[in-house]
Image 1 (cartoon, rainbow, N blue to C red):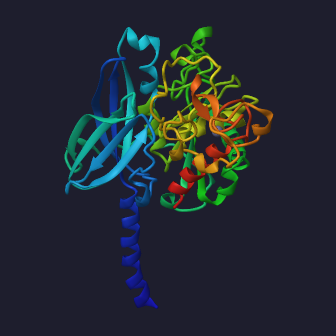
Image 2: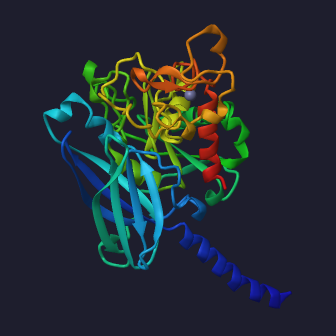
Length: 418
Ligand SMILES: [Zn+2]
């Protein structure tokens, strides 16, 4: 028995070290700057961090969603990581403000640690959805340029952990506008939101495939900013209503701070809960989802924003005021899985439509509960189509995803939870 222990201990140590090194990541923080005509990327810093959450099966993003894409090549010149995402910048450049001034926004990418030379290639889409190379950056992961930084450590609550981060979808709750005295309150909010997520379709089918954690990171003051009411709070992520002049649009611009806080735990997707009862939220694909934690519709807000943030879904509404202009093209097929211009409907939810439902689908009572292609979606009354009369991506209703949205959310969960 003693010999066996002597033999097993080094083996276990090797296995442990491998597990540790596998969760090592490189984080590249950068700025995306410009206006409606020009765009520039500049690197802020590269740092080593732990808590990589993406299993090797999911290193190369195959869904091709997002307005931006970053490819990473190793020292052999092989593509080992690809991630599509959207951010505040791609929305801001369609606002009126971007016609008159330039601004910088924070973005980051987290890639699996690789030894030696690494090349990053940055892409954006044009209005015809064609990818264009924007910028290329090479560095050596063993050089002094790479910071061995120790991010501020916060306690992490494991709300529901079902398995190895590499084989699960890891959702990480991060607070904003909660003080140290309000951390129990944040934990209660996070637990309530987790339950709401797991009680809704299609998340209810995957409860054993999702890990939920919460970073207990307090801020100085309670609440959030309401610029239109001249209310300003000193909070961890400096979240604010009235983003781009839209009152209910609640976001954070402090992405690098958000990444520092998120470095405390594995995170395939970050959900920021803001300590306010005012209605508001935001979601950016592979960037973050954010919602007011104490509103009567928080359950809907979280689901809707995660529709954007986790699954790349578009808004299906077309009547509300938004700050963005000409956001979705109608002459090509949009990349979002739940809207179509009918240019390439077969690539969308065509297979979910019954034979006797016409495309486009007339707004008649007989098709009200059917999956079809109903005109009006993505902030446009004409030229874009949505899968159903109603959906959580269209109006304020919790647990009401249409069939196309359910399928997109399910396939995203399965992609992470291999
Ligand atoms: Zn939908």
